[in-house]
Length: 152
Image 1 (cartoon, helix red, strand yellow):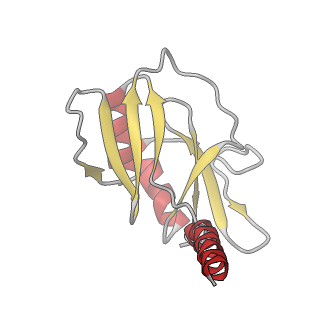
Image 2: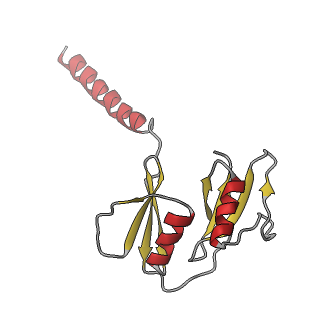
């Protein structure tokens, strides 16, 4: 009887132990933040805050080298000054923001004198994807590519 009780206890502990990793996998990872190394923090902050209209949020470092921006309900973008210069980036590596109207966003870009292009690289042109979504591409002050689409 003692051996049966011990066996049942061991099996119970094993089953309980196996269920913990299974429960941990029920919740998928969620984007917390992304960070961009920028050459000129002030210039990048103005771009993301004033052109893209992202809200700044308090950042804990208070060292003049960070700007935190809200990019989603529970997600942030951290701009971190320290890039040695402005580098060239491939358009296929980009961050995408959705807006209610690409046409209205283009008017905003025109107001700031910021060029954009479509996926094919044609200047001041819009791509209309096969699913009907309009999209454009532009670069921030450090050359990072940004897609803007109306998949809002």
